[in-house]
Image (cartoon, rainbow, N blue to C red):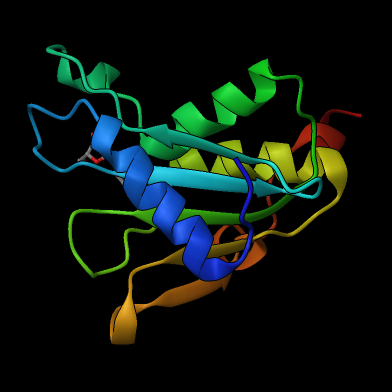
Length: 137
Ligand code: THU
């Protein structure tokens, strides 16, 4: 799947949310990751009857991308929640997105929300002074 501009990437995130498994929160979220080569990798939240085990959409998307062999090249992230309001990634997801970004030295844009409610942030602004692969060298 390709389409790495803001609107197509948000559309991909909305589409991904259709596969959310969110019977407990009823808060379906989709995430779409855009890569340097034009590829888009999506994910949706996957909840669990043991609530704390639930996976966020962004975490699913990062794990999918890693399992396709991707290491870096992350240029943009779109996140779609149930409404127009932005859904910004939780702390754990910021860290997971940061790992993928740092592997390729990028600082992806993070898009969420639509219309007047649209938000755009750099990942580095959402997770300043991030811990990452280089911290272990
Ligand atoms: N959730 C995500 O998938 N991504 C976010 O950025 C925020 C929260 C999920 C976790 C849980 O399944 C539901 O939304 C309610 O918190």
